[in-house]
Length: 205
Image (cartoon, rainbow, N blue to C red; front, side, top):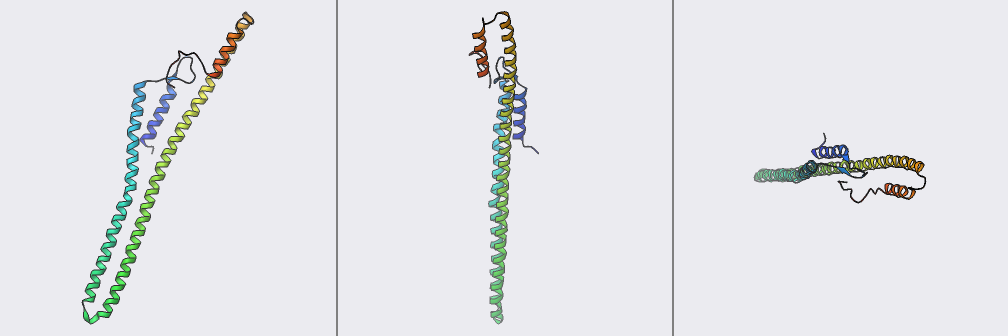
């Protein structure tokens, strides 16, 4: 399921694709400023929420380790209690010491296993959160790259169409009055080629 950040990015892409190009410009479009600001505002709001969610997942590592440590301490404490009970019985002193040492060793092994498992679980959660965040950033990177490539394709197609129109117009004028307008036509072709359409054109790129 896509996150809200991905949905907002798709809405921005769809909105930009649907915007009308500015007159005589291949790289500028006309946008509704209020609508664009609303989409960008929501994007700025959702990004911190996503980051906080990743941080919360990572912070669970500390909780897992603390819980494991508590369980390990409880097992060791129980082992010491058992040791004291066995030692207090003088008639089986030697057996009590042997049993006590065995209980402590078993408890220590169990405690270490709990800590090791908790550490592995916490590290897996952390790596999963990092991978998830990286996947989302990669998707964002690919979306931006795709938008840039699409914009370039539309730009090149628009320029090619205008060049064809200009060539037809220039050819027609040349037939009417050969060589009279050649310098002006050449200048317009150069401007079209370089993407220059006059200093009075403004808009949102």
